[in-house]
Length: 145
Figure 1 (cartoon, rainbow, N blue to C red):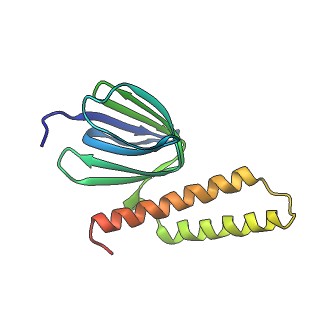
Figure 2 (figure 1 turned 45 degrees about the vertical axis):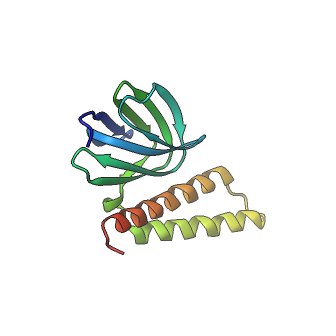
């Protein structure tokens, strides 16, 4: 294992979700999924709703669902400013699936002519789908499925 680490912080308007030294991070950017390792070149990117996969300094995996935001990579430092972020183990999968279904039903009503904000509904669908994916990935890593 490398003796180099990345100082990592993920922040939402409400709280600091995680702040610690990590080995690597995989994030969903608008250009596609990228992996950041120690000594990565400086980078700023917007993030898509999806799953962040972190390899912690102790070798453990951390899975976080995000609804979008921004990534800044500096010399061995990564900061994510997220609209919303939740650790996979804190997500209520049942509630996420129910919210996803409700949003899909509303989208269908809009397609049939009801006056509904498509952008808002699509964002809800993406956010809830990211939560579900995060929980599934976390369960798989922890051998809970």
